[in-house]
Length: 422
Image 1: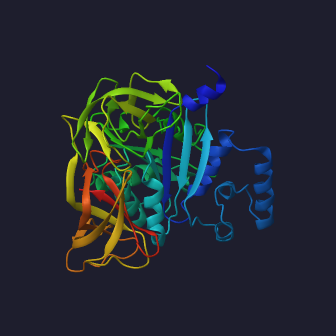
Image 2 (image 1 turned 60 degrees about the vertical axis):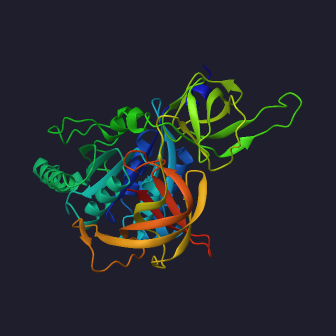
């Protein structure tokens, strides 16, 4: 296999970083990129020069990720910064999300597709309000793996007792949430302890370094391989002499495993057929699974268009116009009861109306606020909506792909809400 194909076939891990302001998220990512030899010399020289100008003692690795000038000037992260790097074992996409409370919506954006969340805690300050907020959002978004990095251990003399105290507090809070896999690593992003290389100052910590964990954590079973869902994005009709009768349905498999010969049903029509072939880039496949993008052909001529869904005959999603959501509100203008929005779900689009607001969440205590149901920017609440046509969905905790929706303001075309179907 050529090097290029080997790179394309490497497993991809998407992870997000979160934490309070100044917990060192950007420095941690800079350290990961630098110590894993994923940046060019001229990039390093540029941030070295920039650090000297600002009078920093050490090379400020955070400058590698702070792309906006306002971020570099204030030393904070405002927008979600995406970074890509690879080691011989895996490819990575990092979403570096802001720590400020007013940018909670940016965390929702960056974390929505992540396999893993790194939540930073400053060893000197311990567990903060934002730690609770980010842990709650990570569990709400169904992120399968959460790694708590207790950073700045060098500033507390690498004290094991400090680390254990923070670990105990986080574990206690996490028992109230649905989180599958939680890990803890004591690190110093500035000095590089336990990020890529093992720390000689913390012999009491016997676990792996952060990079080793990122390279080896098992993510194959993060996808739902049980419920077969194939939202159709487009119909392929080449209209050429060679492929005169070809009619293929292209899209990305949301979940499940499909094979030629499988009996399938097409929603919303309910017509049934058999998969004739599955292909990608001109190659035929014996099976395809999430998250592969493929083209399927069926044995029967069925009228199928964008927004339809191919599923197993005996395993079908919920089909309904009434939907119960946990909604993260992303816009300055508050949610309006009775408000009409465009809703996007997989490759499907409809209009919807907000019928009811059940409650707003207090993210820090996890209590429901039922007497004040106003939902403004960065708030999370439970709402009921009704759509103009039926959607085909699963519960979000069962299937992240078919259980998520976004709401769009019809006038401005802005994405105003991100919802998880309950």
